[in-house]
Amino acid sequence: MAHKRQKLGASGEALAVRHLEEAGLTIVERNWRCGAGELDIIAREDAPDFSQGGQVVPWLVIVEVRTRRGDRYGTALQSITPRKAAKLREVAAHYIQSVQWSGPWRIDVVAVQMDAGGKLQQVEHIRHAVRG
View 1 (tube, rainbow, N blue to C red):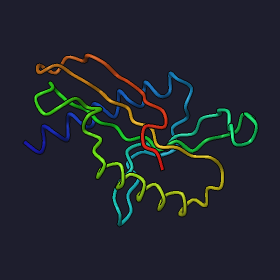
View 2 (cartoon, rainbow, N blue to C red):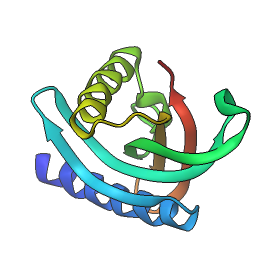
View 3 (cartoon, one colour):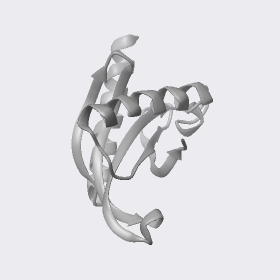
C-alpha cells in the first residue's frame, strides 16, 4: 500500500513540476528535507511585490503537492488541514533561514485530482494557499 501511495505522490509531483514550469516558475529544489519535515518543491517566480509598490521582484515559492485518486477521503485541496498548514509554515521557516532568503515568499499548493481509476481530472495551482 505504501508503495502505491509513493508512486501516486511521485506522479503528482511530476505533473505539478510540469504545470509550474509551464506557468513560468523556475524549479530550484525538490524534496528538501530537514529535521522539521519536507518541502515538495521550491521554485522562484518574478512577480509583483505590492508591499514594494507593485515592483516585479523574485519570489521564493514553496509548493506543497497534494495528489488524490478519487474523492472518498476528500479532494486534494481539502487535504490541507490547519495542522498541515502549520507544519508547512514551520518547515518553510527552516528553509528560508537555511538559504538566508530575505525577499518575499509564499506557500502555494498544487492540487492534483485523479478519478478512482487514476485518470487525471485536474491540476490546480493555488497561489498564497497557506497564509502566515
